Length: 388
View 1 (cartoon, rainbow, N blue to C red):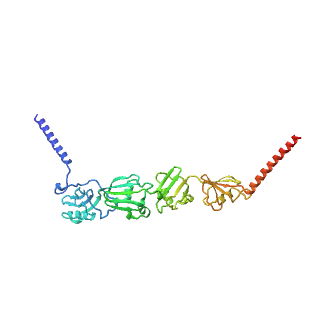
View 2: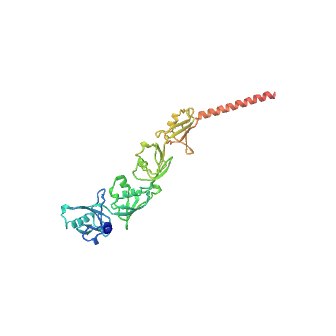
């Protein structure tokens, strides 16, 4: 009986000690000499920063430092009060110091206990800041980002620009200051000073382009109006279309702001630079020109940007006897007008009409009158026969 009671007592004591150990393990363990000053803790997971950090970066709560000590390596976080705690050395406040100043302050604390050759300090993770992007972007709104995030990276976080974004007149609102940004200088020319580092509570505003600063592009699958960018080529516009695919389109009909129409083969026109208010129509089929009237072969011909009406007429077999060179007309968009067959421009879809020559017209009238007189003579002869 005594043995059974002793065994139960032993099991009870063991259980109490195990529970106490488990409870103690769940209590956060602070580093340093005095727990009441500690608000940072060692971070066990590896943390890495991609890219270099400006030495003028301002340190604050949420930043992480990696500290190399003779006993090993610790990663500590800057507390909400701006303090960094190092076990066995104490604490140091680094809030609002530049990165170089903060590292120097931490090193000064470490040197109170260790030799300089055995210690090292570096930042391994930066604090989060908050910024917003409004206006002509795909997914505008508020974002929590790493400190030292650049403007181009922030634009990526909001899924990029809308087609009508006016990148030349962007604004960065920082407190009471407003900075005007021409983002095309960074995109086109790589001007790094345009790609600024964002700060906490920055607001980026991307306006929409006005109608006189746009280019419209139309295909059989849809239409898109994009912001005009000075110096941007036709090929770059096509590569940046977001809402529709260029697909297998081979030709482009371009209407300039002054109404002039040109047709290009896309593969040969990618380096052309257009003015604002240009309209572009893309085709996936070969454009045709239609020829009719006093020609030997009425029909259609493949459009050639270097051809004039005279070339299409000649290919259709007209002659100076049957057709008139001086009165050639074109039917375009339902309207008919006379043209100079040697110089005036022909557009895809035009219907070129060659009227009959005066000789042919007079001959037709003469034949008609002769036929009419023949019929009348026959009628008179028959009438006279019956009258007898």
